[in-house]
Image (cartoon, rainbow, N blue to C red; front, side):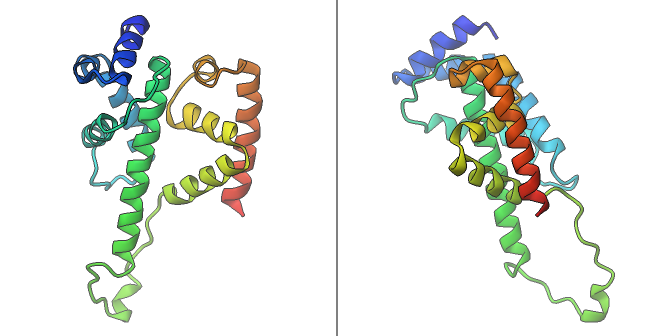
Length: 185
C-alpha cells in the first residue's frame, strides 16, 4: 500500500470522513489478512474462527473507533493487530466460560479418562501477562504489541512510538525475557 495515500486516507478518516475508510479498506485488506493468518496459526487447529471472520470483526470494531489521530500505515496496522488480539482473547474467555459450566454436558467419571486436554498456547495467559507488562512499563507493552502481534519491523515500531530503533530493540529484548519469566512461573 502506498504510504502517502494510506496516510492521507487515515487522516481524513480520523477527521470524520467515513468515505475515506471505505477507500482505505481495499488498500489494507491483504495486510490485515496476513495479520489474521499469523494470529490464527497460533490458535488451536479446531478453532471455529477463521482469518476472514477475524478481519471482518476487526473492520467492524475499527469503524466504531472515534477520531483517532492516525500517524501512518504502521500505526493503523498496530491498532488493527491490537483489535484482532482482543477479539481472540474475548473468544478464548468465552470458550473458557463455556467449558466451565456453560452448556455443560454430563460425562460419567469412568468415561472422563478418555478425554485428552487441549494442547495449545494459552492466549489468555499471554494477554494477561502483556497487560501486566504494560502496567509496569507501557512502552514495552506497546513494543510487544507492535512487533509480535502487529508484525511491524523494528523501524516501523520505532516510527509509531517516536523512539529510536535501538530503544525498540532494548525494550523488545527486556520484554521478551520478562514475559517468558511470567509465563513459566
